[in-house]
Image: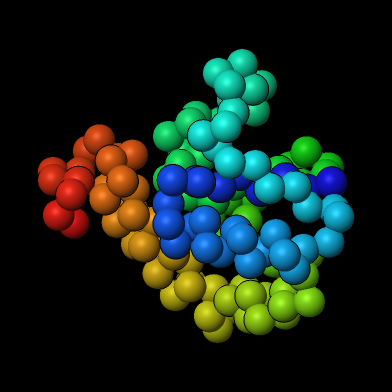
Length: 123
């Protein structure tokens, strides 16, 4: 079973997760990071701030995927997976990854997860 960790306090993220939850198969579990206890987070071996900044997915084989790779893999548990897989094509992968990371960084600043942002409410 694959497990996708998501930020339940992010409105856009929650909308995507709601759709994913309706369409996914039984081999994907969705966990809100804010519902995890400190000991559960410690067992994951991933810092909470990292989980909140970019998407993380722990595959059934215990390997981790991050950022757009995690999102794409999660959507492979739906009939729409092929749409997301396009972003992994070599000709699009670099640009897709840069766009995702720029969006994730800006989102983390706005939500106050990245303490190095100069003004988290106005980025």
